[in-house]
Image 1 (cartoon, rainbow, N blue to C red):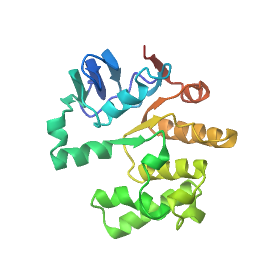
Image 2: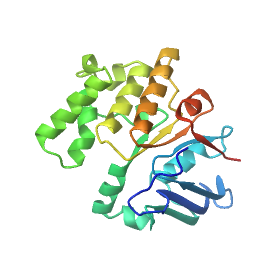
Image 3: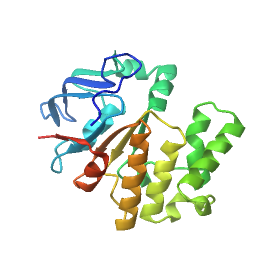
Image 4: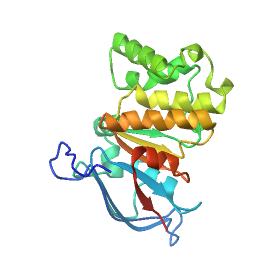
Length: 228
C-alpha cells in the first residue's frame, strides 16, 4: 500500500474512522470499536467471514449508514447524516466516492445500459456534450458498445458487473469502493477486473474492496484489514 501519497488536506488521511460502533438493532453491534486510516492512493482489502460486517462498513463509508458511536472523517471533516442531508455537500461527497454494489441488480435501474452510464454525469450537471463523451468513452473502454441499447435485466452476470462499473467510471471518482467485485465473473472476467483495478490504482485512485479471494489483493498489493 502506498503510504507516501498526500491528499488535498496535506498530511491528514483521506478517510479516518475513529472508534466506530454500529448495529442494526439496539445492543447488537455489527461493527464494534473499529478504527481505520486510509490515505490517498491506498489499496485496502476488507476481509473476514460472512456476517463480520464488511458490507456494513462499506455502506458506512458511502454514507448509507451512520455510526451509533465514533466518528467518520473524510478529508478531515466529519461525515454525518445532517451534512449529507445538504444537497450540495451530498453531491460533492458522492462525486468523490464511487460504490460498486455486490449485486448489480441493486444498482442498475435505467431502461438501457447507455442510460445507466449517462445517469451519473447528468446528475453532476455536466453539459449534454460532456455526458455523451463520457458515456461513449466508458462504453468503448469497457468494450460494451454492443450493449448500449440493451436493458440491464437482459444482461448476463458479467455484463451487469461491467455496466455497474461503467456507471462509476463515467463519474471518475477519487475513491473506488467495491463489495465482492469478483462475484458473477468467470476466470476471464476476474482477470480483466484485476487488470482494470490495477490500472486505476496506478493512475492514483484509492481502491477499497471486500473479497474472500486473495488474487485481487495480490494484484493491487493491497493492505488487508481483517474484521472480527
